[in-house]
Image 1 (tube, rainbow over the protein chains, first blue to last red):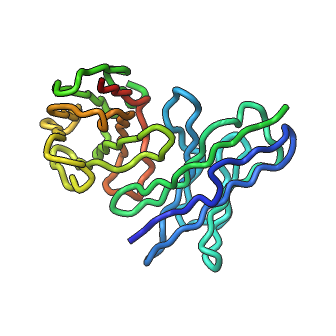
Image 2 (cartoon, rainbow over the protein chains, first blue to last red):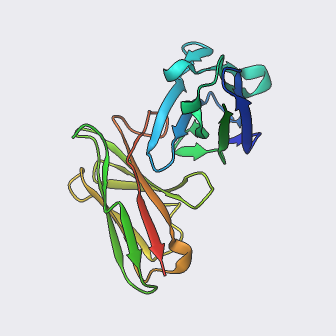
Length: 110
Length: 115
């Protein structure tokens, strides 16, 4: 079985400071992992995807995530938060189907 | 079209009514998925099609929920005798290949409110 756990339901950062959204996974085999973002009243948008080609994955809008097998983690980071980053973020595990985490709501304070 | 489209975007139904939600996937995409997203929650898997074949319907919450994709493109999710607990956003996604390891492209969702 495969599942993902998002460790924080809500994260608040000041504009211009780093962002860290945490995700742990459990999988009995090499996982596929994704981060999606959902802005209010908008569809889910893919930020980045881990496919085992490289442990550090770069995505859109300056986001990146590092796959750490020893820690079973796939945390999402961004060096400097922008107001437009405020949204709901989902860590997703892919297997026979998609397994969504419960989401992390990111607030960016001006 | 350029992306996944869903219709209607909003649907209000009286308890007991039947509803039909439509999904137009990206042209040429083999796989199609339906998810249910309750308020403040992450999407939960409902069902999966590979072309016209429904390979997994383990997430459908009851036999009131039925999905089809008869020609391997457009899909319809039907909910019979709607209940208040069916109120949610219903998301459709498609992917070029098969299975849950491929990138899925999501539609904007249909927001269903059952009164």
